[in-house]
Image 1 (cartoon, protein in one colour):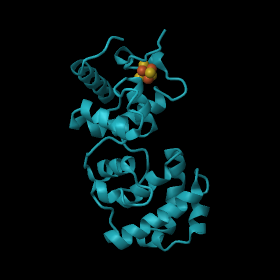
Image 2: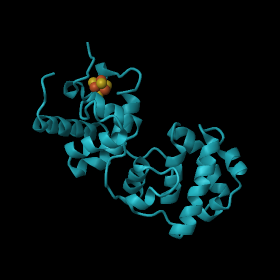
Image 3: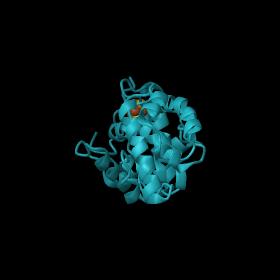
Length: 220
Ligand code: SF4
């Protein structure tokens, strides 16, 4: 592919966004959180290296046992481990979510802060998680949550170059490319697209609805 100008890349990026809107008009967060920002934060922490489905299976029992941040803050780590033991890294995650609950209670009066920097002070919360929480729970869009799907798709679509080799650099590349109104939808749409079509091991290019816009399209 000849070198693409920024203008051409932006146009291609917008065309991808339009197709995503057509295919995923109502994409939403797959994690169950009952409209509660604290529960969402914990669910996102639990979802690292595991499936959203797996998290959704354990959270009803977790919230039944510990309905409030103060309840979770006072929990015994072994009891929490028992509840979440079907998900990956449950041992570390149990300790982390209790620590997170303690800080939310002691520093933030039991409420998840609505601020990117403050959110990242919570144990286990990085920029990706903070982006998801701000966007989903508060409707605040400050960036794009670059998880494994968004990272892979950004690179396959060549919206991020080889030097954008971290989630932070990939997020920067996407933020430069897309206008702000596209940032929120990307968070949900690209995750679905990455699970269904542009899958990690073998992308389904033959049935991909952005194949004509993708430099990596492997359609025969
Ligand atoms: S054409 Fe293939 S590589 Fe490109 S976005 Fe679609 S599935 Fe992914």
